[in-house]
Length: 82
Image 1 (cartoon, rainbow, N blue to C red):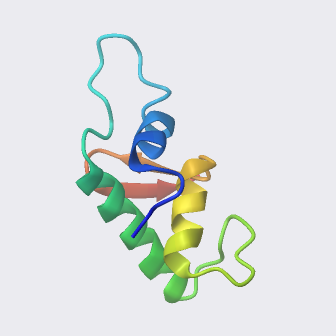
Image 2 (tube, rainbow, N blue to C red):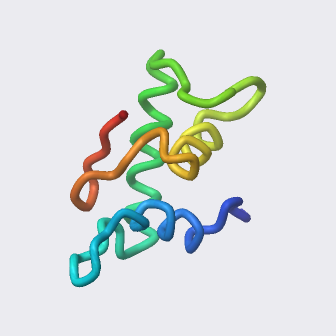
């Protein structure tokens, strides 16, 4: 399955606020997968999408939310909405 934006693009967005010398928030694809799958489950459970979800699957919505910085990843697996 092809993911757009790519894992690399998502990792760059998530880690964009890191100060020089700090550890990146996300260091692996696994963290991206865990965060987006957790958010997708929240959307399936009834939480409102933070981007236009018209006709999109929950995972696609979660990926777009992460890419547009509507949600953030805290730590390695925890996620929080802004």
